[in-house]
Image 1: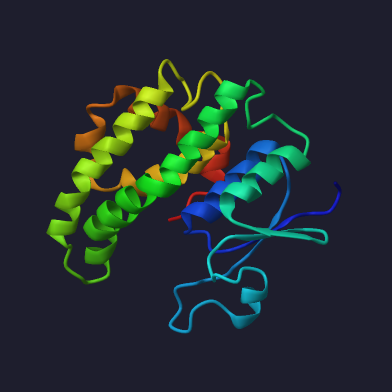
Image 2: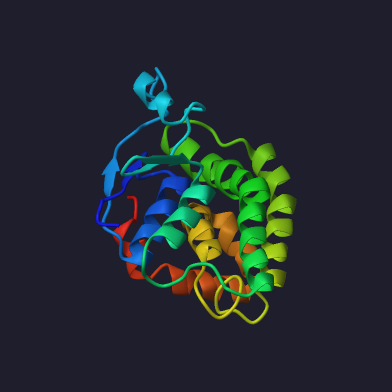
Length: 212
């Protein structure tokens, strides 16, 4: 496994960062090739040969190409030496992938786009926040946070005593979400998640992949 993997995507992307976190936690050197899908013309046409849906990230390791962040991070964990990022016990492994599914299916849109983007990013770019969208997102955010807290149980990580892909999938989303003032009000009711976030934000992998 001496071939350096390549990650295609933008450093601001939640999912690109999740892949980079997995590589960093495994101690795997990699190359990041910038791909911006939000340009007026969309992603470069040649990029669609790697990712036909035009999303980021895409991944390359030698002759092997892959897309979808969840698949990439699992490959990284299983293909490279270093600390295991998926539990061996079937129950905990299932919980890890349950959390990843919750994040993809429910939390990402709610926490990042409906709360962070509307409250922080839109005004920063001269727009006006959609207060109705934010207000409607709060109950969904509560459901997401409650589900994560219930799965977390004693912690200190989302699925037990050890860091897993679930933590690395969640952390980039929380990095944006926690910038919004609503996040602090909501997380006050979830001390376990707040402690988890305070622990995650100081990890070396998080510091090395931080986006301004």
